[in-house]
Amino acid sequence: MKHRLGIFKIQTAPFLCDFIQKFKFKNNDKNLLLIRKLYATLNQNDAFEKKAFQHIYNATCFYTNGEKVISYRIENGFHELGIHHHIHNFEHYFSKNLSTRELCDVNFSFKKYRFKESLEKEIYAMLSVKEGKQKVLVSNSDVHYIQAFKEQNIGIYLQMNTIKVIEYYTNDLIVISKRLEEKHTPIKLKSCFNCVYFKMMDDLPLVSNNSLHTCMLIKEKATDIEFNEAITHIWSYCSAYKPK
Image (cartoon, rainbow, N blue to C red):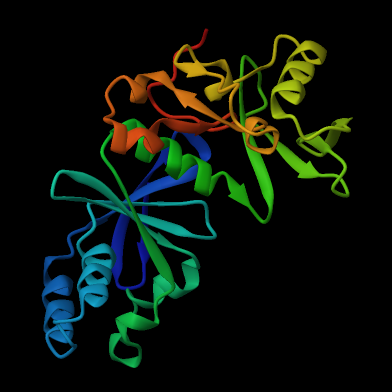
């Protein structure tokens, strides 16, 4: 679909699920030239401003859940993400009043990944949380996602559309995932938990063991210093997903 972001035309498409959109800018060469001239007046020796400029105006593409934006670039062989924490701040940099604000005002951070699967599951993990609600993908159903809420710090309950599904007086996401699927067959979570590459990490402390485990697809390609990229959340997801 074609939309606009400030003075730019953009083209959007779904990314992994219905509530995350991927978008690119269309026909913006003249506008980028004007932006480059503006940037020439800034402190080009500032490393943060250089990186900020590249992620705002020269990103390969962007992802959004309507609340925050993630920009994507390849730098020195790494997949690099820029996390823009507030979409309204991000939109400012594509308005006609560019000179009213400096790049250093933007509120965002950076992350680097060696593997495509790593960045996809991280984009999904970051953008599947909206207003404090964790979205869980569902397959084999007309329901495209489930919302998970904390229940007074004593457990979690899941909501499907506007209906509360069930309360779980535990924070163990493995237990919750299994009980949900047993109760609502044939619904099956489309997440790392049900992927052939998912492996439980039994040696983690209990608090971590409830959510963080290993993606063997990434682990088999990763070096020792890249091991953290193989850590995945039970309810994360990427395009390499293969059901068990």
